[in-house]
Length: 199
Image (cartoon, rainbow, N blue to C red; front, side, top):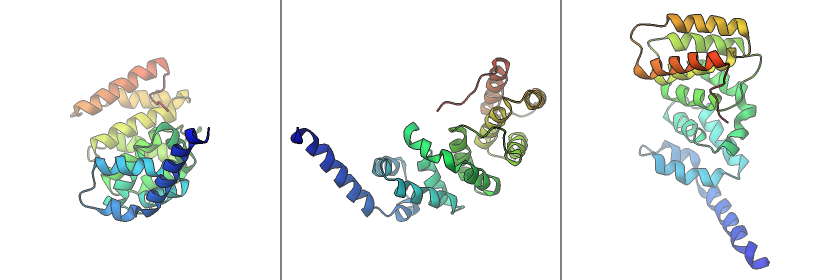
């Protein structure tokens, strides 16, 4: 029986040692940061909550490419690891409301969309989503996520759902194909009262 468990335990110990050797800030600051780096980092922090916290702190406290890279790795968490972020929801929302880096804002909205949203919704966050989904100056990815999140925040409140539906129905003009598709999908989900989220 000992032989069966020896290799996995040894492998786990080696992974923990390797994880301790990686300087996350240095790794994320590299100009050549790419998908391979994500695949290298994710398995190393999978079972290490202190390294998850370190990565999260880098995502929250750096409104630049370092924070963007850290948030991007968080967005690749497995559904199991993503649950670790659930109790960070208010902090993530606070950060989204003031974030000036468009790419980082998009990734952090994606993190929020991948978790159960508070009910009743935070009014400041709902207002932010309603404003940004209509903003032609915003990145299409941010507009799309704001539209989907606004729907999820309104979905259980009939008055808010009606107001959102009216807003979506009058959205015309130069919508990008992606935003047009998201709008259509939200209106379709709204008819059925169906959530767009998957956890």
